[in-house]
Length: 188
Image: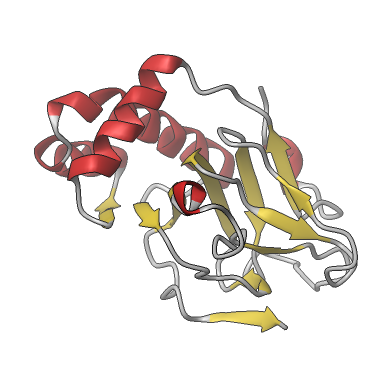
């Protein structure tokens, strides 16, 4: 699978559906049961691996390996050597407004719960990535980005779902100097 297409000037999003094997699903569920709401690591791939090695429990090692594999993919596609890897348990309607991030390129993968949603027409029609899909999104700091072909995205609203479905486990990978989570343009 190649994600190099995201580098095209006329493409803002590239998504590939990927199944989550049962063993990885079990690791993600185990992580959700015991671990902190937010896990973040920054640095080169070896530095990130070392940080995760001491913070991810044994029962979630497959999850950690998948995160590292995706960090390597992100590094290959983006050319960045210093990365920020975030694994977050989401239980609210965070990032519920359509927006464009203040990054150059972002990788998202939802291990548990609904995937990222996006729109190309200000929210009139909404697409949703299936759980497990790997999604690359351009942000407004991507070289040459002008917004003409922009796709807005958001976290899927959870409050309207049944209580048992109001949780997501989301992996986000950016360049290490990526802006703070609250620093993006939103569309109501």
